[in-house]
Image (tube, rainbow, N blue to C red; front, side, top):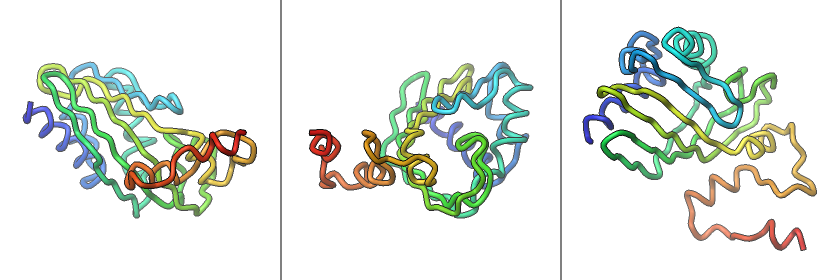
Length: 172
């Protein structure tokens, strides 16, 4: 199981540190797919994933992106990471904020990555986040009257004592 975690760590390093498309693809199976659930962005098959990574993901993250691991679960066929990602929205991020021009706003969001493996390589990535929370932080969704939050949700993942149930109280 540690081998799967090592493969995924190499995948992440190639994507975010080395910005190396070929090294990223080398960690993946012959027929991978990537699916960002909130925005339905990603790719299917080697050509689709390569095109997505090359044109919409690798090197597209802001320079100040910070990743904080909350938990990791590994079994014989998958790795699940729970993270908090923070960055300044200073460039187009079509995979996460499609059609939204850079706002200059700081965004912090909990993120869950479910990675399936086949033959010791990444077969799929399912990435989950709260799109409404990101849009609130980017200043393009007014939370007034809506049961949504912004950076508070990331803060609450990092600090278990952060007050809870505020949306319930506001809705009464």
